[in-house]
Image 1 (cartoon, rainbow, N blue to C red):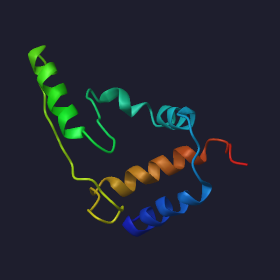
Image 2: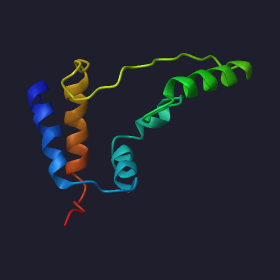
Image 3: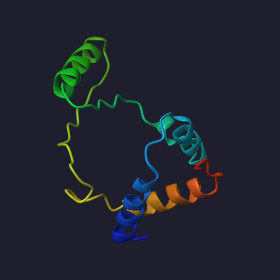
Length: 107
């Protein structure tokens, strides 16, 4: 899957609407070998206050003796506003194959 195919695939997923809950995400991560278990960190997301929250968390964790690194990223309004990493397309291919093996719960 090349960049354009990956972008087309992601764009096509929007037609199914929003499905609340984490069950599908949990199942997909499990099918991919639970990669989230390899990451030790905090992901801060939301509309407002991320900088303040990150600064406070970094201070608390450093005071507790943890090694801390911050990676603030500018928000992205659309998928094409900044380039994806070279590993994006192969990762999306693996993700798509894993999700295709699961029975669909769409009605």
